[in-house]
Image 1 (spheres, rainbow, N blue to C red):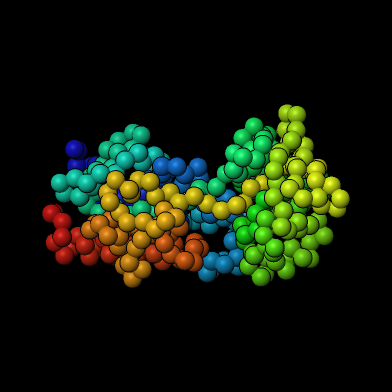
Image 2: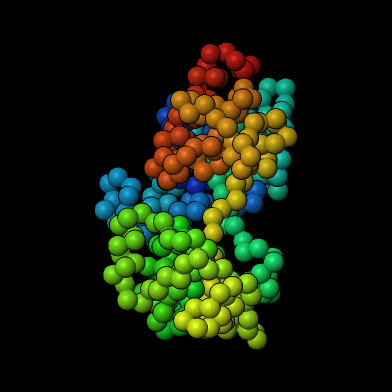
Length: 320
């Protein structure tokens, strides 16, 4: 394999976690490759944060759009000559003589160490909900920031009760004339600050203890059928549906290496070092079994992983 395709540290995933890891690896003079558009991820370089309307909990920025924050992190990473960021899809990772072989849709690379920073992707509505596939991109969306402007002065529904669902509702209330939050549980559970904002917003209405069982329309979404009446009716008129029911862990590429995972598919790590059970393999961010998942915690884990990879290499655990 050509020398140019040999790296000290290969990062799978180009979100904030992966880019931060690359920066710290570069400061430790590790030749580093970052592969964006990693297996299964729909988000571009910059990761899931690019779909966040406003970030208000990242130090140094009182309020900044997710796209702007991601761009600043990427620009910072690109200032290091040791960092090579490529928009390639990783297809397979296997053990090799002197480390690991990563195959992408375009090339093959050798790495002395590997970091899984592959994150998550949006969980889709169950196929059991009639119309859930038929109306994808015809009124069903998984990204409020991307598609919100398409629903100016219309009626939309958010499916889910998380903080992400709440943020989507607040964003969409800037466009739509009415926003429903439909949640299967007894009470939505966003961050308290976002719950207060929702309570103050007269456009947003919460429907708890309710599921949708069918999505109806002709060419695009026109209504949803609920599993129980709301204000006397099971059919609720909506023009769009935004889904925020959680995420799927993108850890498939780690399985052939024998990396240990929990029942959710999260990669188990040493939370002091970001090490997995496989020597030379590290993981950080949303793909791990970390309980509290935020960009800031992922960045910290990525930096820790870079330092651990540096120690792994310099202590002679891999051949030069």
